[in-house]
Length: 297
Image (cartoon, rainbow, N blue to C red; front, side, top):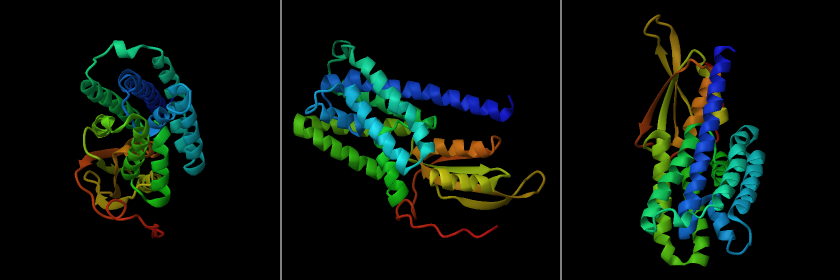
């Protein structure tokens, strides 16, 4: 096995480990803290919780049906490569959710609903963050926002918040306004926990890649991750060779996939990553427009 095969095997094992751990934490948080206290959630699990009020099916069954539908949507609208990263979670999460459903969690943990909401949010957010950090996808309601970003240029965070707000509003029809404070708390803490887990803070990251394969890396980031790139002309400090560094600023959720795309092109690429506190311009505060053809270097 050569170096590239060994690196791919390690990345695959790491991805599988964090997919299992992250989805298990997410299912545990839902069954141990959300369901016993009748909290409202966003995402596909929130849709399943709302449907339980009118459809006599278990939460895991409804979740499996919804995830399968979103998976097929992602397969058609985004492509096979993205769908492959979501396939495991689409199958594994409903299975582990079905196992946890059989445990009487309500008698095993704290009865204080505020503590349950906070602790459950941290567990669920950390689980989602682990999956994303490893370069995987939780599937489900991650997929429609990604489709909107790809075809309409709407940032994932904006559309995801709008979807979650609509899902929580639908659940209020069955549970009332009194649960809204807990639900908004959960929504906020989960988002914070996801960001802290993915990049230990911040919502966006700046990535600089130094590699002799800078053109292939730039093309890969543009095609596979829909990330804008800038080539910074420079000179090697040791041998004085002319080269380019690839600069890209992206949403935190994209970073693991972008890093994996870079390493597929050049496993020895030098990657610098830093948190970004503010971004302005096309693709962020301005709508992204159709790219013009690049000129040849």
